[in-house]
Every structure is written in C-alpha cells, then in structure tokens.
Figure: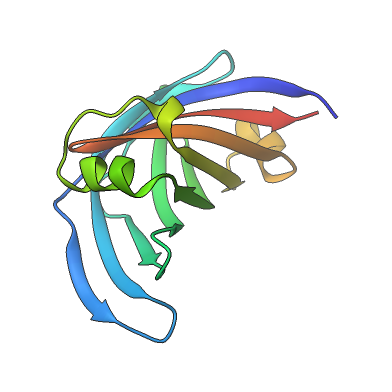
Length: 149
C-alpha cells in the first residue's frame, strides 16, 4: 500500500456539548459549523450541519465519529464520515481541553475516512479508502487525508 495526499481539511466547530457519562465513557457532541478543504483533485467547503459524536473514555482517549457534507469547488455534494482516536499524555490532553494551542506531534490523532456521492465526477471517492492525521485547534480540527493506493 502507498499513501497519496487527498486533501487538507479544516473543520470549524461549535463549543462542546457534554451529554454525560455512559457505560462507554463521557458522551459529547460537537457541532460542525463550516470549514474548507483543498487537495490536488478537489477542493471546496464544509457545510454546516454535521457533528462529531465523541466518547471520551476513562483513560482519556477520545473515540471520534463524524458525519458531514462537503460542497466541491464545482458544485458536487459529498458525504464524509470519519472514525478515529485521539489520545496522549494527560497533561497534553488537559491543555487541549482548555483550548490551548498544542503541537499535534505531542499526541496521537488518526482518522479513517469514507466518502459517498452520486455525482459522476466524484464516483471514484465511493471506491476510495482514506486515512488521516490531524490536530485539534481551539475552534476547529485540521487534518490531512491520504488515499490508500
């Protein structure tokens, strides 16, 4: 397998909505309010309306589960779902929780990305698996996605 850069995504977020503890961990929802993406084969905007339905486990690891819609530069609509994990040393995760800037090299944040569309120009994405590595900003997430070739 090889990795080929697909796009860099910046996903803007609302403040975290804490739903409370469950048997999996602390459930929270983070609404997606916009953003953008740029890559060699496509670019565009992240539409508001999606969310990240996270669970923060007892050991501090966050299980990421996002779903949102993209609109490409040429008007196509794409559904994107990601799943992944974010974890690191307790002091680093505490700084992230406070909204402080933290270098992504200080923690682990990896994603699996799946796309879905009916637009003929982007049907190749339906058959493409991608992985990503990212970082959390105070009001956004930024990640680079790579197709598995």
